[in-house]
Structure formats: structure tokens, C-alpha cells
Amino acid sequence: MSIDQIINELKKKIFRPVYFLQGEEPFYIDQISDYIEKNVLNESEKEFNQTILYGKDIDIPTLISYAKRYPMMATHQVVIVKEAQDMKGLVQKEKEEKKSKDKELKDPLLEYILKPTQSTILVFCFKYKTIDKRTKLAKTIDKNALLFESKKIYDNQLPDWINGYILSLGFRVNPKAAVLMAEYLGNDLSKISNEISKLILSLKPGDEISAVMVEDNIGISKEFNIFELQSALGKRNIFKANQIINYFASNTKSNPSVVTTSQLYSYFLKVLQFHQVDHRSGETPAAVLGVHPYFVKDYETAARAYSLDTCIRNISFIREFDIKTKGINNATSNDGQLLKELVYKILH
Image (cartoon, rainbow, N blue to C red; front, top):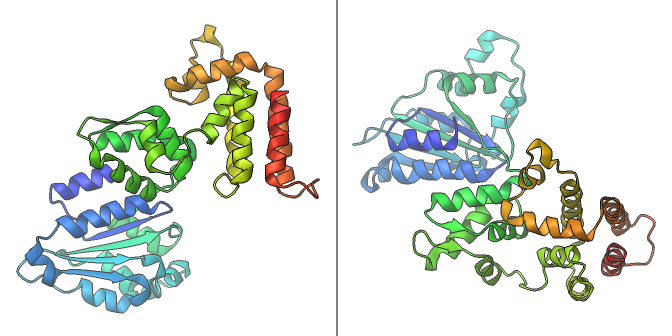
């Protein structure tokens, strides 16, 4: 089930006895468990019927004893195990291969999942990894409980995710603002969500989050950032590009070379792809490049400034720069010096 399907079920008060929420992306795991924690029981019911446990502080027999209790003056009791990946015995149990069917049936956790207490809502928050699908534990959970895997969002999907998330909150976002947030906040949905919450505090429903708002509130330099560098390079604006590079060289902690490398590589790869768009086949540049149509004009400008062969040459320069920043074929130059050399080569 998707997260939307699970939340919709919960809103309709359709509850499962066991939820096993796992995966590399903790954001969706927290969304589901937080919804259950805040909404299944009312405030008076929570006092006696809601238990929040932490994996490092609990073992399986104790957990089962909690799960088998009956609710007091409520239809359900809620037991949530946060950080379940640290739970004593759970990971070890997941790795064990059961050889005897009789032994399997004596396992208290498997027995409970096969026959859970219907008035209990037991939630496992198993973060940053998944259980081995080949094990008896995984197969039992998959067949007899709600198993949800929260997968990491790829970097190139982040701007679309940000746009969709902001729309779900009743606001809009400028495409450049979405890309700025994706690049500067990284692949951390919880961090992005928190920053978006701050941005919309002063907005009215339907208002748009602009790039200027993002720059002002998330600590991004308006003039000296990777997007302005790409723009300067795309227009062959030597003065502006050198201004930005000098700033980067003086602020290497805020502008690490690994980020600059990946962004410039991606940028010139897209300019290269723009050259290869086959308009006769009905292809659109935005679809081929995998970018919002808003940004196509930037790549069109850069394609006029750099021929296909020049793009290939620039990508080669960027790869060489990446190797040198890692200490290969470079004994004396620091990242700032190497970056200045790279930009000079690209522009000339």
C-alpha cells in the first residue's frame, strides 16, 4: 500500500493489528506513525491505552506482553515501537534461518503476528533499512500484517516531490525555488518539510513560494550560488563567473567541491542532451532533459554558447577536476585553485 492509501484507511478508522513500517526514508515512516499516535485515540483514551516504546529499551517478550493487553474504556490500544531497528532480538531473529517448523511456531513474535490481539494496533518503526525478504519473519509480516517500505527519493525526483508536497499543503512553488531547495537541503525529506513549514507561515493559502523567499530564509547567497554560476557559464559571462568562483574559493565549507562537481557535470550533460533533441520525432527538450519547461530556455542559451564538441570537452574537464580534488595527479593545488582553473578552461 502507498502512504496515501494507508492514511486514507486510518482516516476512515480502518485499523490493522500490526503495521511494520520499514525503509531507508524515515519521513514516510514518521508520517504514518505520527498520524496513528495523534489521531487513533482521543486525549482521554491515550492516558491508559497508548504506549510509546523505543527499540533499544525493549525486548520481544516484554513487547508481546504490552501488545496482548486489552484497552481500558476504549475500542483500541496503540503500541508504537520507535527505532525498532535497535530492538533486542529483532534483528538477530530476522537473520536466523529457521530449520524446524515446530521451532518456528514457538517463536513468540511470529506467533503474535500470526494471531494478533485485534483490539491492539502495534506499530514497528524500522528505519534506514529493511528486513531480509527471504526470512520467515519477513514472509510472516508480509502475509499477516501491513508491511510498508519507505523508499528513498532519488535526487532528480526531489524538485517534483517538493512541488507535490507544497501543493498538498495548499500552496504553490516557483520551479526555481523547488530546485534551490532540492540542491541546498539535500535528500532529506524531513529537513525539507521543516523548512517548507517555516516558509509558509507568513503565506495565505494559494500563495507561491518564490526563489527569493528560499534564498532569504534558507541561507543561500542570492548572487553566489551554483545556479548563478551555471547561468554565468551558460551566458559566457566571464566577469560574473569569476566573481562567483572567487567567492566559492573563499567559502569552501559552504560550497564543497563535490557538490560543485556534480552540479556542473549534470548541467553540461543536459546542454549536451539539448544538442541531441530530435524535434522531428516530437521530442520536447523538457522531456529529454528531465527538467521543468521553465528551465529549458537556460539550456537553449547555453547550447548556443557551447557546441556539442565543446560540451564533451567541458565534461572531460569536470571529470579531470573531480579526480584532482581527490588528490590524484595533484600534489599542491587546493580545491579553490582547481575550481578557478576549471572555470577558466570551460570559458576559454
